[in-house]
Length: 375
Image (cartoon, rainbow, N blue to C red):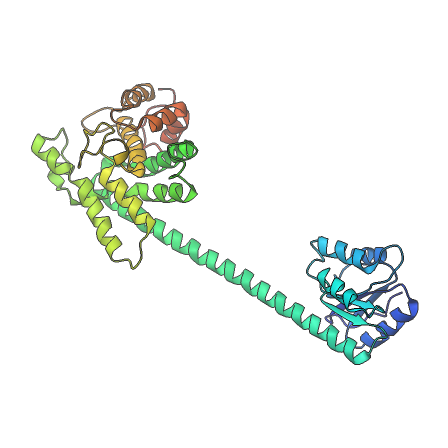
């Protein structure tokens, strides 16, 4: 049986009771304020919810043949579409243990028969108001989560723009580098992904490390803004004195990032990785690099990743003082540097997936400066 339709917008109640007299009484009491749907078995309750609208509240008799109220409630709570719809048990059982069982089963309230109209109206109204409050909070939380995500995305984009702007500022001082920062950034990300499950790196490389190292990579040569033009832009090989000045770009970059870091109230991991990469990406595994002659694992992992990326891109790129090497020649150079210039395990991972790195080089090539993929 079912009540006549009433104006749209009122809460919908579903009543389940195997007694026609009870259904008629409950429908008559609730119809003035609510849209009421009534069925006489648990099975029909689940048939009823196949048609919109989903009820806002279920009034459920406990003692019914075939499928009693506890069984209906168990299924009701297991279904995603109904698990948040409150249930009020209606029963002639008056034992305190029965009420406790009903509430423990997931019922929101428990009304004993014979039904008192004022109690019924008050309990129904209270459960609907509680449901509306939960939905309001859920919607509010959803909105806040979306707003936080949007603002974080905006901040991330602004940070990326700032990083790229600084990196491109360094590029304007050294115009031959072209898309060097984009390529090396992609190499670093790819290499970090390749070794994230390696036993040596598993404790350091996670999603956050990869994200921040990739973001930091464009700042590796930011210190070049502090190198005089007559050295930075010299069309030929540098003298020993000029090379000594050129090498200071690593420390200049790290110091610039450190000054920016000092102005932030709390530690930011991004600054640490950016500083490591700028400062030590020219160090060598055997300790013969600069500026500090660090060796092995004393060189931060972020800088070791950058070292492979930076050298690979340099040797496949044309400069006024040298031609670009072919990919085959570049592979040999990287392989030769295993254990001397580069971390052995990073080198092995790089060479094992060498095609991915040459693909990046071709995809982001500067005109004709990168060799052909088959070179």
